[in-house]
Length: 398
Image 1 (cartoon, rainbow, N blue to C red):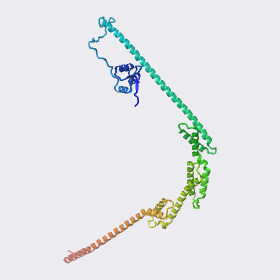
Image 2: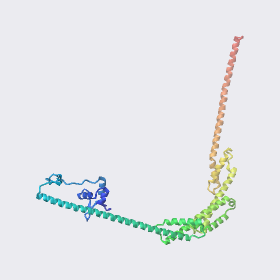
Image 3: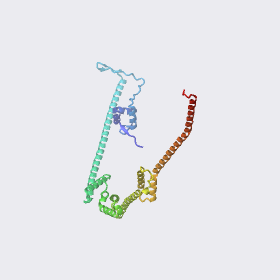
Image 4: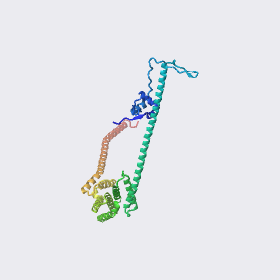
């Protein structure tokens, strides 16, 4: 458990905006909790100081008046002299002596309080001086450490610059030195000279390894260029893609391990080139299939839909991995044509529905005509008969 903190009367007086004498008087009366040092100086616990900050300073307690004590009288001056408060007697003389003793004791107490204040001030001044001394030592130590670190960084950069070959291009030297500086700044505390040299060599190896192995990289890329198939060499774009892929993986391999062997370099380069060749062969095969109108089998679709169907087949074929079988290509084609087959089927169904509706409307017209014709003939006959009968009754048209 941590020890409690104690404050002097001067410190408490500063915190509570009170006089040091007032704080001592409250400690003597017991109104404030305090402890006494061997030198009879008051020390106030931190908890009590916090309580006083919340509640404020208490009133100074006073003793109750004694039974039988005379009532207090105000001193009055007569002709500039104080009036006696009692007749001269042994009791009065004894009381005066007691007052003198009390005043002497009070003076001694005041001197003790002033002495304690001075001691507190000396203690505070000594503590402040000690703190300033510690801070000065810390600043001085930090300054010395910074000086040593700057000196070490400069010496390390000189060592790194001396280990960079003169044939290294200027931009690569700048990159390497920047990498060395950044790596050294991360090292805390300053490492030993041996560790510093190892770090510098490692950084230079990582940054300049590709340059030192540039001749080996060019040799492997030339071998990969000569090993390309004849039909691939006829495509400048494919050759460029293959060599670019080989160069990328070679630089990555050398950056990871500058001492990687030639067999490993050939292996990673061949793997990258084989991937480009496989993609080229797959594209050629897809193009042959797209040029085969019989294999595409899009003639059943309307002429307006055939280009979209061919484009869908091309997208499906190119999405297949290199080396896909003919069955996989046929399956991809059929799947790509499914929406077009569905559209043709919907159009066929709609056309059949339209024809059937037209046929039904024609049948309804014929049926209505078959019903209306006999009725019209019957009404016409009735009309003729009516006209004839009317003529017979009145030949003159009356």
